[in-house]
Amino acid sequence: MDTNDGIAAVRIARNVITEEVTGKHTGYETPGSFNEPRGIFVTINTYPSLHLRGCIGYPIPAIPLKEALRSSAVSACRDPRFSVLEANELDAVVVEVTILTPPEPISVKDRNDLLNVIRIGKDGLMLEYKGRRSVLLPQVPSELGWDVKEYLENLCMKAGIGKNKWKENDCLIHSFHGRTFKETSPNGDITEGTEC
Image 1: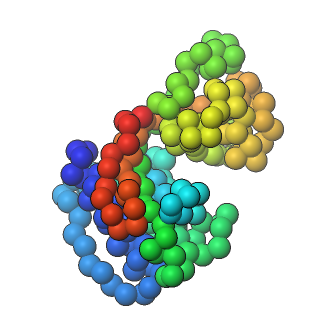
Image 2 (image 1 turned 45 degrees about the horizontal axis):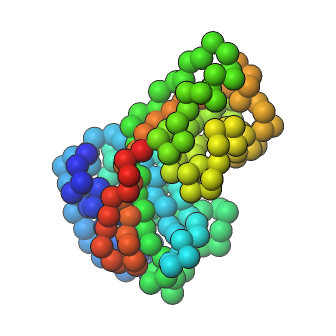
């Protein structure tokens, strides 16, 4: 996945979002590399305040990137934490796409060692515990000023489990990395964030 693919992913996500909220077909082409299965998240933020407006994705590379991108963009418009995105908001939001590496389990002898191996701003985390799952992207703890313990606690709370369940051996924690590409303004230039 190169920089041009990241820029294309943001443009495609913007087109899909526009189609979803206006009902008008915009038309777009996807690069051949988008046939490869990849994990991805599409984030919609308000502009210029950059408050979260919607974020949905696929942490596991189970389907081709082009399908995951389209589905995530449509779903981000309807993130259940917020009201449905409306057409009159299109010029007041920016689109961000994070393309992920496959999640890998973090193995430690003592659960408290997680505090020493997880890197803020580098490691995205996925939690699995008794049928519950949650995901936080690598940039989230940096943006919110969390330390590793707060990161793990918030990952647990997002899964709807007690904030200290990360300490239990049957609570599986996976890490992944991502490359983030985002609009600098609505429909504006696209930049790459720091690789995480």
